[in-house]
Amino acid sequence: MSKLNQEERDILNAFEAGELKRSKGADKIKKEHQKYAEAMFKKDARINIRLSSNDLRRLQKKALAEGIPYQTLVASILHKYVEGRLQESNS
Image (cartoon, rainbow, N blue to C red; front, side, top):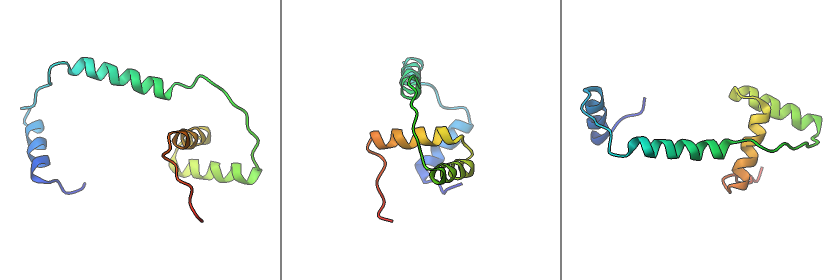
């Protein structure tokens, strides 16, 4: 576990002592964020692509190392790319 600063230790101690209370509207905010997450991860379209067998094997190996199905890895890579969070490396 990483080292906590004083504020983080105080929050953890208050949580463990049962001293924290939910803020007003917490349930509503939680439901809204659950809707956002469901919409983001909703998979409602199918695509077919052709890859070299070498690329597919390498994807499968990486997915196995991550402990996820390779289709999930491919979907994650594509999602990060369209969101602008995937940077091309110079290797």
